[in-house]
Image 1 (tube, rainbow, N blue to C red):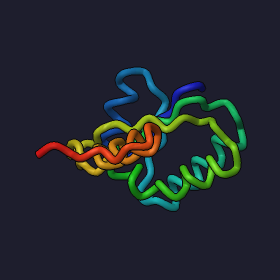
Image 2: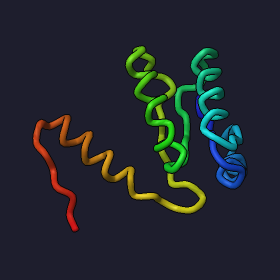
Image 3: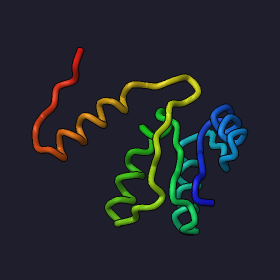
Length: 107
């Protein structure tokens, strides 16, 4: 169980068809419980999370990093409804922070 996906019914069904283990969640609380269990088990290395859910779990990702828990790695994918666009802003901010220069988003 090195790759696990969490998300809505439709996303998980599609990923299961591709052979990826999936856990269906209905809200952020359920997602946090599953993440806690996956961290405790230590078997999951990559966690696929739809973008809309990943935005709601940002605090959880930061919490795990503060605890120096680097696994599972969160791989953020577009959700069933498509890309939200917030992920682009987050990536620009991370790159700006890493290189020490404020980048501007293109129009």
